Length: 226
Image 1 (cartoon, one colour):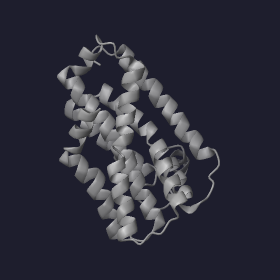
Image 2 (spheres, one colour):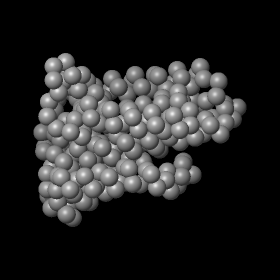
Image 3 (cartoon, one colour):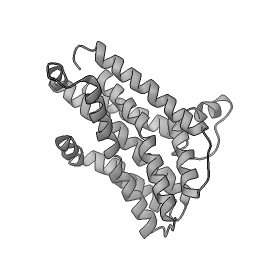
Image 4 (cartoon, rainbow, N blue to C red):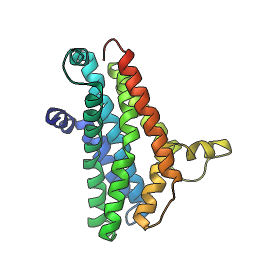
């Protein structure tokens, strides 16, 4: 785990893309706005989870490391748990950077309980993105995996309303409501404003977590190289 954390934190692309970019967007266009704070924190959380969990797996597959793990006592469940924990932990730098920018520059003044609620929602809500990143890392190879993860991230961010504003036309709005990014955005906004969203958003995130987790386990079980 320590090796993976150090490897991720030394990745300049990760630090720029998932720490500097959301902070920059917040400072340029959303300073002082709670909605912008939540949106950029969700950006950092979802991107960090996807890339930290999936990118490392793709690299390990290319080097043959995952094949070697099959002959060790490490079970599939423990391997999956370790990867998910890594993905969740790697959301923290971006989330903390956005929140610090909101406090120090945006003068955001949320009560401690709301900060704690927002942090809890973001960390828990990053789970389906960790698992989706793992699935992409186990399915795609090398640079294709990295590109695929970036494409999926921006597609979910745009479709979910994390980047961009306004409703989508027709059936696309209904599709938006079923995306994990949109559910996390609404859930985070509710936490920051002290509101209760009910069970709808949690249900969407839980469904994505279950589906992505099953896909990861099935892909690893039937894969010959990971």
